[in-house]
Length: 377
Image (cartoon, rainbow, N blue to C red; front, side, top):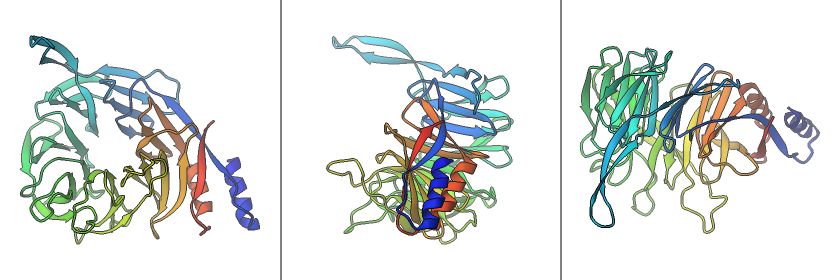
């Protein structure tokens, strides 16, 4: 709060912009927050390296509940060429919340685990592969799951678990992200590599859920001198007016990609230069994107910061980082909180009202983004 007041005073007086800080809560976890979903005060985390699910109540010291993921057998050859049998646990993959249940992809184990949320107890295992992306319909009656190893996604009934497969557009392969539009009419499939028209670029496919057919595909990435952009889609955020989709990317030389969902074409990109690498990478991995009122929040992995972008102008207005530096990969906006997650076993929790007040003050200044340090309160 002090930093915000200093900013307002500095702007009013025309003085040089002061250093800013924003108070945050650091919530320890017993798992790496590889994937997370938030419903009210309840936070669900799938730990890739921790090989378990964790649920906790945001803002409380109540102990987290943990659930180890399923075990599986693995056979390998030792240095002498003899076969060795090992029992391993699945790595935590993507999550979706629907119909009072938690759907989690179990990487390496090869199934989607269904967990009853009130009792935190497994109730079903769907043999659809474990390396993929999940999304849920707004009414919770359907979950969508796209596998990384097959060019198709599945439409799953959350009550009886019946499912059907829908093929990707021709010659497309791999999955990067999956999301249902806010109105529930379209499923957007971020595919790692496109068909003949896209070459080695990624594509964003729009599947019309009412008509049961694709409404179009957009080639992603900016070509330089005829070469493909190597990036892949990682997350999606929908503009409040429905006129833009923002695509967070992994290893893209273009940055955050902007897609027109009506024309199904990329219309812009928001580039981020490298702050820390020497020599710099051609990409900095702006992986996590989320809408926050009239701003887009972006977790920029290699720059170890979260940036706020004004939607009207696509101008970066603020850069947030911690000291010592923390790597961010995901941003989740849920009610009165914003959650930042990265590669450490902790969540950074920001009060939405504090962030909104700061960004509203910054918005009136046009001399470049402010630097904000996230400080544990």
